[in-house]
Amino acid sequence: LRTSQPPHPDTGVGPEHMLKQAYETDDRPCTKCSQGANNVNIRFDCKRTLARPPVVFSLAMNWETAEAPAADILATLARLPLVMDLNRVFAGLEKPTLYRLRSMWCWYGKHYVLIVYNPRIRQFVLFDDQSVKAIGGGWAAVENKCANGGLQPHVVFYELCPDQ
Image: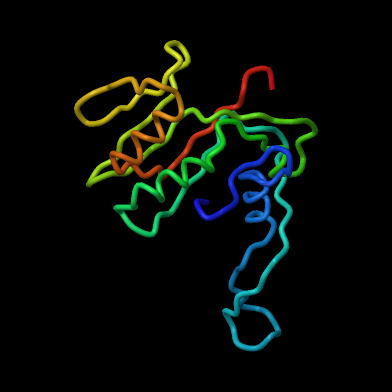
């Protein structure tokens, strides 16, 4: 994600495009193929469809290290959309299906913390083992908190926007 092009609404290149590409092909071992030895990886073209939009969907991220540099954390967060249209990722949805980033499960040190958007106070809130603290300043403050604190997002949760 962090090495992909940043989201750009005019070109249509962004996280939705990247996810769609990732879901369109699948490499699987083929034990019954006629192309030689068993367990050869074969590329299958896949079409993923949704019959109806889920209320919540999540993105899980793998990191190369448990202690990523601040620049890598910032680059990753800069490419996470705050609003995403699953209609651009999956077939089967007839109209734009917008989701907003609601929370992130992040790793740092030797434990996890949770960052959740609270619509009542219109701020992201950080939950850790000992405290609950509002992160003032919007998404930019969340990016800075994560980069400066070494908080690596591992699972990002998106919630279906109302009236969808």
